[in-house]
Image (cartoon, rainbow over all chains, first blue to last red; front, side, top):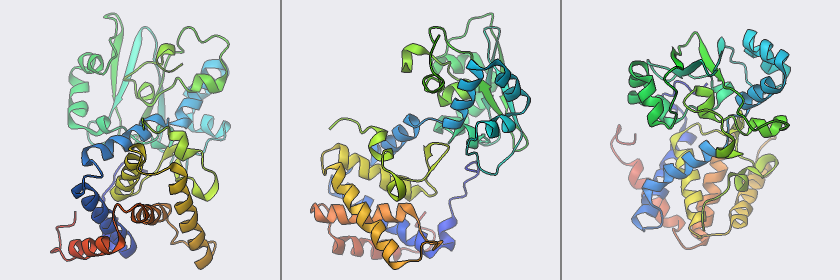
Length: 209
Length: 116
């Protein structure tokens, strides 16, 4: 699980501590020499983390889009559905509730206390998911937050906010976008972004297809 | 140089391929992602060709294989990446090993509590 990093492992591991020092030494030297721009280091990493999708969640959604019976099983028992697709999810089995987004109801997920997140299905939580503004504001004013994130919902769509915890996590099953008739399962999976699985975006053909 | 496609890193097979969980890159410590970020930034600035870095990484991993049992639990992928990056920037004349050793010693000598 990557939910609760303490970041102090290196205190107890001499090799990890030595490497952390070496990395810090390299970074400080390369910055001093103008070879590396410190402000861009994390941006590069973030781009990689963003571009490499949460494969497991995407595959579950894509299969659910093309197979109504699998969709029923996914909602009934997400972990069994993951096993059915032979996804590598690791040993973690915190209960997951799959929430279906429709034109009538839009679900969005938050962890108001920390950053609980079904990482075995959704990958690493994005930085904003852990940020205090998202955690506090999405509960009070979900429509405004979603609009700021690029998702403008119609007034007649009901918005529900779900608070993750150590006991239960959530995954969004977004609606299959129009214009994807005849698409293969793999191609459909590429539409299912991390943000769509959290409920702050909707899969769109124009964006990634 | 433009942006690196993730496939450049992730197309590698076997032991060269970075650790992934659920398809995504896995960093267990902050320094691992910083070294990865520095490597990609230097590459994108044209400081080296991608295959040059790959060759150093191959050499470091091969050296580990030569000197350890196959199932040695001490193996860490990002340690190998760090060593490959050090060799590469030394070979490119960007930062030599002696300077790095001096800086490491300097940082290690800080009072406790200042290295976080």
